[in-house]
Length: 238
Image (cartoon, rainbow, N blue to C red; front, top):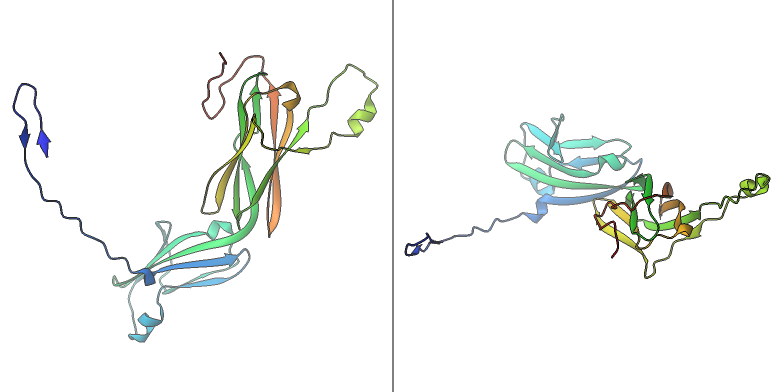
């Protein structure tokens, strides 16, 4: 450790640092996987605890740090869904403790980060959707171009025949990014580096896994002035 003051000699002193290694009992860490709609019982005591004799006393359960009102060494969960996923911690009589991580498999659920995005031609923009899914989902983006208004008031047939969606494929100016899959959550971001007029219209974020599928609609609209997008890139080009 060294202290330096202006116009004075440095003052230093040796300090002994002892790092204590914490022993982690891996047998007290349990991972449980269950499907949506199933019933499950979490047991704070393992076979070793039960073999030592009758363990009695107050039992405290917590989920993700929040207290659960349940004074029993077993926690029964009925018809679980994705909201039941989390880390459950139990403590019995102050001397038996256990962490149980529960992950519930479920069909994808999508949240749009911003339903409507606007940008001026020639500038970058990004659209994103947040997907909750277990197992890991397959995510695809589709684009439905905005129909061209040619001023023909008699073109009713065009309205009856909507444009077909096309799969968005990554290229030099288009990229699809996945941001950190954790605890069943992942964000998919579609980035357009140089917006052109044919890019305006509806975009669909589609996610699927073995249990189902979901989709969410976003819109890219024209802006008369360049805008800074949500990932903070400059709104003007040199």
